[in-house]
Length: 213
Image 1 (cartoon, rainbow, N blue to C red):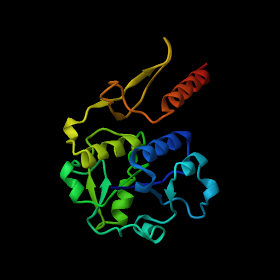
Image 2: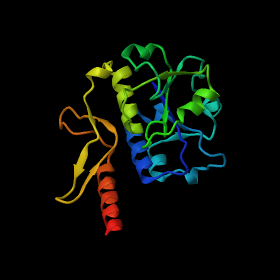
Image 3: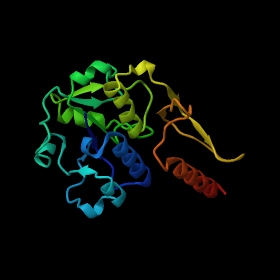
Image 4: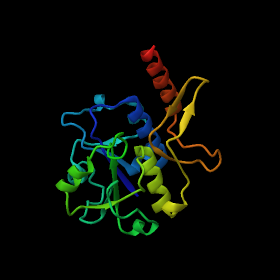
């Protein structure tokens, strides 16, 4: 299963680095491609942590990705799934036979959500088929994790345990509510976050408190 992240942000924030790092660990470096980076991007512009994990990246647009990765199967009309919050049909296990690629990106991780998927749908009306992952906003790593559970593990969406808008409390006076839906770890019963994300959330929470004071 191949996953494509349309990188529509300028640069790489710490949040994005942690998400992408976790996705690479989850799906394997050979199954993830970061596309549509700004023209002129060079290896020195890519965070070393991502390069060390084997990140594959390109400045090419979605349809032109195989020109940089000739071993990849061409993107064929109707065989590329765009995870679209506005799609009418939820992703289902049988979709594993319908699609070769699953496209994500800053598409699903924004809050409030921006209508970035419309740009892709307009640019590639025949290539992309929309599927939805429920009606709640997800981070990009959660969206890919959910997709893996559905198409790789063959688990129905309704059978996946989620936690919506979890609150992380760091002290009596410090707590942060995240405005996203997360997959729950069946062992710990806690939302699954990228490695290092809790520390980043705590740091951002403390910074926000300092700004208020």
